Image (cartoon, rainbow, N blue to C red; front, side, top):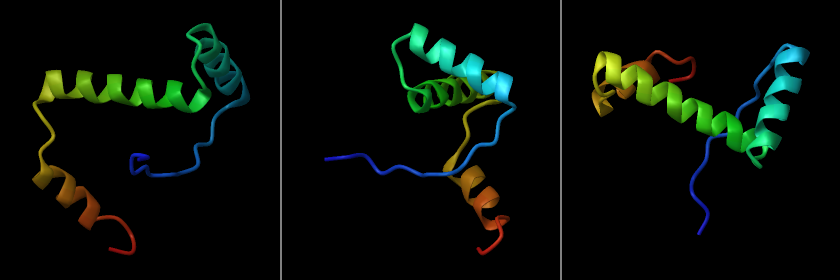
Length: 68
């Protein structure tokens, strides 16, 4: 069974995109997998410095999104 995923578009400077592809291939990952890995690392670092992001924190942010 496939995990639920959120899809969205990311706009990157071409040089950043090419370097990201290089790094992804270096680690035998797809660009998508590399971006997911980087996002997880960013979240882990943020939570180490600032504390865990709670479900309540997430609800507050989602309520501020257009269309909600």
